[in-house]
Amino acid sequence: MNKDGANLGGGRDDGPEEEGEPEVSPGGSRMIRHGDRVRSRDDATSALEGHEHVESEEMQAFDAELTRRLGPFTVLHEWVSPFVHVDLYLFPPNEEFGYWRVITRGMSDLPQTVPEGAEDWRHVETVQFLPADTPGLPTGRGSSDPVKFDAGPWQLAVQKRMARLPHALETWLGPFHTVPNDDPPEPYDRKTLLTTAMFLPAGMGLPEDFGPIEVGGKTIQFLWLTYLTDAECALKLEKGTEALLDHFDASGANLIPLDPARACAVTGATPRSRRPWWRFW
Image (cartoon, rainbow, N blue to C red; front, side, top):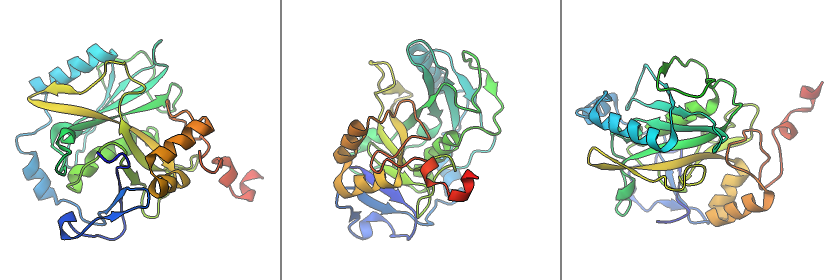
């Protein structure tokens, strides 16, 4: 698999890939621009037939395996579910992992539309790592009881949006893929420079033996969701993923857990440095 992945952007609609060669960035990333091409609700309903998100044996097996690996968790249920029903499982900080581990449940109910050679990534869930003191997250040691969730950190909304994206656009998310927040990309929040979601192989931030889960005759892979600034994404597209990771190493940036207010690893800019002068008075 190309380590530089793909960049799934908005903007113009280039049509299905088979109609022409995809645009490739200088750094080797395939540029996929979906524009307004979204699967209709009727198509989505048809695709979901036989895949209803219910308390099935498959779900119970998935939950039991995650509990065995990571311990008890809190469920953030959703009430409106376009395309697929996506809950978030929140595993609280503990002595071994001093941060929240947030895992989707439902993205893998439908297979992604993967190209030849990427069949291992047909069924995917995502995980992200948030600081222990993230505002809006539940307190306590975690439980499997449902929690009403109305307004949480922006990272949770992005994670759910990314879980639906491959099914809405009939595409796929895999290692080293990036998805900008709009076109042109906008910061997710006024207190951050982060504008682009990036997916990496899940391994860091989890137990050493954490791997795919086999349930219901399918293999569910996990992707680590993190975020980039404009300059970091531009570097990845221009020079490739290795160059970006080298910048992270050189800058000392710590991606686990996520620091939304972190400095850009390329420019050194911080959210405070981009504020207009009048904001300081």
